[in-house]
Image (cartoon, rainbow, N blue to C red; front, side, top):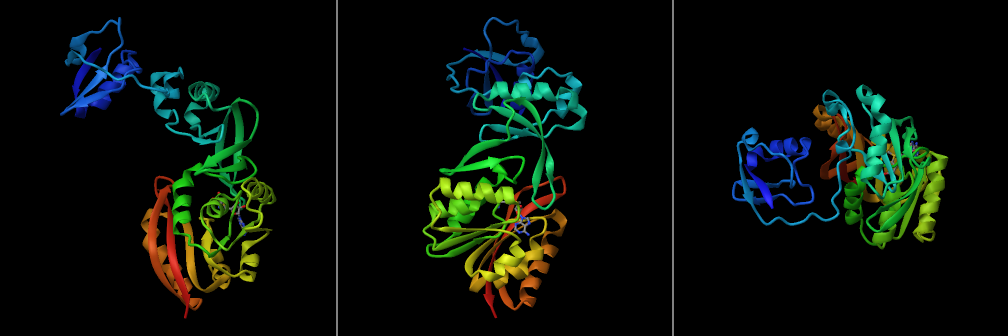
Length: 339
Ligand SMILES: C[S@@+](CC[C@H](N)C(=O)[O-])C[C@H]1O[C@@H](n2cnc3c(N)ncnc32)[C@H](O)[C@@H]1O
């Protein structure tokens, strides 16, 4: 097969250029050897070699299987608008949630249709207009496909029923959730203070031989889905669900490990969390914070714990994800022990 032999450092630039000019054969896998990449070329296209100034070589190329196209290749927007096309979107079950920049709003339907076209497993594309308020629910607008907001999401072998409009849910926390599953120990009692539809609760319940899980949420819709998900995963005997304010409910419970996934206001709940803890235990504390403020905020958290009469030891500090150009989503695992 004819391939354009380009230096690796030029590879991405030339690949994009070939793609734009519809010269790249996307059925073939890009190959490499030493400092060069071999970009497969389509047959029977007019190709002006001097434009690129690279050698065309004949090379054995592997076929790509299940080739997934980028939706951007289908959208027909003026070149100057291409930079506004969303570079990613969330997929929850068979629903895609996409944030559309203001500059490219008029192409919203085309973006939706192209996303559907390139993902055969998707049924619906919705516009994600951001998470708000205490329940952290999203403002959603329908763009393309089936008109629905409910779906089944699969993560690490468990199924969760989710309504992407009336409850909070993010597939972006999958790695973080599994990290907590791996930290959780046999026979522990776990408190999921802000449980939502129950991803932490269900993943821990299904993967660790814990003694019990208490799961709280204030949003009645989230609690409905939490109940469904506990039932769907046969965890009714292991999980007790509370609808209400974790600040009031947590102090009535006793546990060994607490998940505090309310990253904009976890600090307001530290006292309630600690009063629900056995003599010692682990807090999985989340916050969304200006990157420059991480150390100050962590120090103030450890100070709060100290003033409440507990010794605190930071076990792990992890960047969960970048939240905005200046903010990050952090996770702190803190071992606390009553003084
Ligand atoms: C960021 S979401 C996390 C949900 C879930 N842990 C997850 O990972 O998908 C925070 C959740 O806390 C709930 N919430 C907010 N304030 C609360 C409170 N005072 N007590 C209990 N739950 C609360 C919201 O309804 C929301 O479902």
